[in-house]
Length: 610
Ligand SMILES: Cc1ncc(C[n+]2csc(CCOP(=O)(O)OP(=O)(O)O)c2C)c(N)n1
Ligand SMILES: CC(=O)[C@@H](O)[C@H](O)COP(=O)(O)O
Ligand SMILES: [Mg+2]
Image: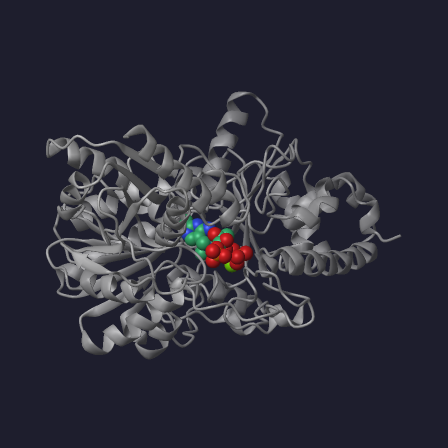
């Protein structure tokens, strides 16, 4: 029997001694490594909040008190102590345990999406609601990371929370000095100074990078700072050792008793207790796939990823184009910019988890004569739509968005799929979108994109390894013909869906249905050549890894209508909604985007037009 076996709910924690809690923390760390090594997931962040989570659940009465997790990737320990330990074998699996809080799983869970810097807004809203309902003794607690605090939305919430000095909110800053890379900017420097001054600075991440640089040297702040939060009118407690449960409980009890908003600044270590994570300089095993628990490394090296291929091309381009600069929102490694940042530190800007600022600052860079490349995940680009519209497109600026993790991502759940970019960017005047299908077209279309002046461009590709090259038979009007027939069904494949489209076309041929498979390469605006190709075929099927509604297929239908061309068009894409977690292949198949389903759609289209 282990201590963990006897923990089914937070109240079970309150009967343990501090010595037993220390032992329990060790069991939980072993549990996390054992399970996450098999399923993949967020290992470093959760190893860093073991003691903090135990102290929070001993001090506050969840779910009566609301415990909110910003991003939520660090809520595994919260799930373990709220009765879900037995479900971790299905972590991030189809129908299994979500990698983020989930109201369907537990009343202890609240915010289900993984988009950073939002938890304080929920806290502000919940605190207002509890004040209005006379429920003031039910505390609202938000755990927000130092990285998440670099997001503007968090400061919008702090401004509002600080406006009500008699409305209690407990703000727990989980300060480990890291987003993925060391957290950057003035706030990071401020927190680092507080950590250092208090003597809590115990890890090399303590320093903060020179503002703006993705690989800057640490710049310790000599001045004794006033605590930023107190200047806002918030009570500040800390820094507290985020691994010292008695110290945490003392600070959290004081915060709980306060009738004012309180910041509890906790200093933690990402990856603590698991040497491979502690020693991982890139991101302390922030997010891992299946790994060998002894080494922390994947059992076999993965293939070249789209992100790495993009990053390699950026290094080549930077040598040719001195005006080229890159921007990342706290994810230089994930978006493939590590080599570029090392080679050109002055030309790679990590702005923190601040996508709106990333795009708006790109407008400034472009106006000043440079060509910025903003690399973001598709799902996080959603946050910066106004900046794409009003800062880049309205000013007709030459800037390039590299939309990584575009399309279905899979096991990271509904808030990580990059399903919306093709639909959200369709209406942006002047913006051009490329969707490469393989490594050569990624290289080619990225070069074409950064050559565009007077309008923003976007290049979108999925998560994971780049597939095999897919050579074209010929190019006509900018459209690559991948397979040809003379009057069969025209299959328009968007980006990486080309492989599924070709596999489907081979299935169709076995059913006597001839197809022409084309890759338009640039999907906004669609090449005029597509209209001519449609007139030469009996039907059209479009295939895209994105929303059906408002995507490329819909745009083609509108273009055909505007050109007065009547055609049978079948649009294949992801239906409205939030696909649950699962592998990319599972979710694509469920959306009807696997080769077999595409073939069925093509055959049906052929039959309806006989
Ligand atoms: C809006 C947004 N942009 C980017 C991300 C990707 N992301 C996930 S976790 C993370 C770092 C979070 O750092 P912090 O808040 O300090 O939490 P920690 O991982 O250190 O516990 C980032 C950038 C995100 N979840 N949301
Ligand atoms: C929580 C978060 O947003 C990131 O950690 C994300 O889960 C990483 O996704 P990838 O694994 O696709 O890089
Ligand atoms: Mg952090």
